Image (cartoon, rainbow, N blue to C red; front, side, top):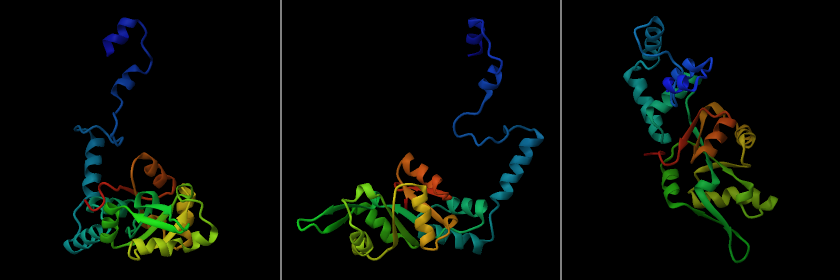
Length: 212
C-alpha cells in the first residue's frame, strides 16, 4: 500500500499513521510488545480479571445463570459500575405478536422460543412496548395490557413501558424504581444495541445468545 502512495506521487502527511492505525475490534490499548506501556497494560488486565474467592465466583456464576448471561458479562458490569445486574428489559416486538380478535379484543401471542426463555429468567423483567407496533390501544387498553401480557407469560412481567427510544426506557425504569445500572437489554440487531446505549444500560444481550 505504501508503494501505491509513492507511485501516485502524492503522499499524505499522515499516511504512516493511517497505515498503522488499529483495525475493527481493537480496544485502543498499547501494542503487545515488551515496552513498559504494554507491561503495565497486561498487569492491569490481569489484576482486573483476577479470579475472586471461590464462594464469590460461585455466587456470580449462579446469578449469571439465573439471568441468562455469561459469567464474564456479569463480571464486566461489576468491574465497570460496581453493581450487580438483576433486571432485564425485553422489547415487546421480540416477545410477542399483538393483534385484535374478531370482537376487537387485544390478543397477545407469545413467540414460542422467547416464551421458553422468559420462563427460565429469574430476575425482574420489564417489557418495552413500541406504540406503533400495537394496534391503536386506548388509554384503558394500555392500562389493562400488563394483565393481558402476563396471562401469556405466566405473570413474569413486572411492568411495561411505552415508547421506542432511550428516554422511554429510562422513564419506565424510573417509574418502577429500577436502577438502570442493574438492567440489561435483551435485543436483536444494531437498532436494539443503539437503544440500550441511548438508555445508558451497561449491557445489551443478543436474544440469540440469551440462555444459550
